[in-house]
Amino acid sequence: MSDFQVALTNTAGISSVVSFWVFVSSNALNRKREILVKLAQGVMVIGFAALTAAIVTRGIEAGRFPLANLYESLLWFAWAIMGGYLLISRAYDLKQLGWLASLTAATFFLYGSWLPAGQHEIKPLVPALVSYWRQIHVPPLIVSYAMFFISGLSAFMQLWSAGRMAAIYFAIGALVAGLSAIGLGTFTDVNTFFLQALFVGGSLAGLTASWLSLGKIDTKRVNTSRAELYDEVVYRSIMIGFPLLTIGIITGGLWANHAWGTYWSWDPKESMALATWLGYAAYIHLRIHHECSAEKLSLVSIGGMLLTVLTYLGFNSLGFGGLHSYGKFK
Image (cartoon, rainbow, N blue to C red; front, side, top):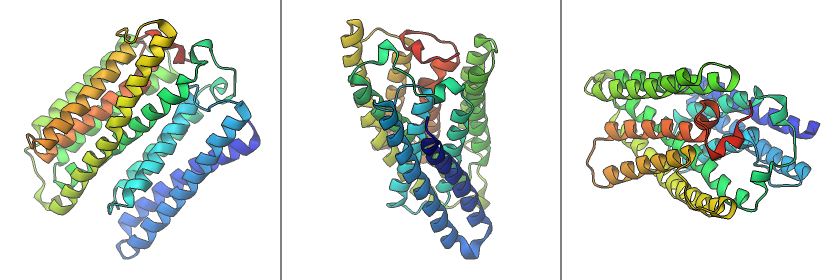
């Protein structure tokens, strides 16, 4: 990996951190909020441009499409988070969502930087990935995951604007449990059964408690117009991500038939991708037919975000195995 590529990647990572703190500062300085929000978005644009250049440079240096291991997929994910936020913020006044989007990008930059050095190096492709299907199948999936994350972050903001503070705390607990399991599975040798129990048990317990506490409302924090705005952003983000996930699943089946002679083998990662698809299909059905409140739909979106994390990172970090286990690096 060249020094130029490292410099571009570091610029993008630092930009996400700086953008986060400027967004946070905008909440503390009401008189300068508009200026600071624009400044934070400008810094994020710089980071997005730098990361775009880093990905292109890595592809040129590798002589292949730059999406072949976990580190490269994390670069794409951070790129899609930044780009997705910048795209949606052009249509909606999203002052609060910016710090969550930049924090998410910074977190995944940090996660990628802690991966083993072998992940950062440009190496020949493993035989399973030597196919033109790789650049057709994987990018739509990564971008869909990023859009689902944006929908989940927007769901937290919707609950905040609706005064559902207790529900937020329990939902954050579910997310922390899931991400902690991923982190432990990536960087330690903790028993896989414990990791799986932490992810699944923590997620289910947190979401269930959050659902049951939706009736508790902090009326002092209620902002109906902002809650409606973020409910709309949740929906729009999912409507971008869902077709991309659909394309990813279909092209994955075509690649599987080309490589393994079957379109569908009920591999754990395939099955979880299907579960994620069904989860968001349920959200769209409930949203269109107005069968749930906006707050319940927000929890459905947060649950979908946890399914997305499990599909994207869980099967290489939590020891589920399967035909996609070639992505495991430990």
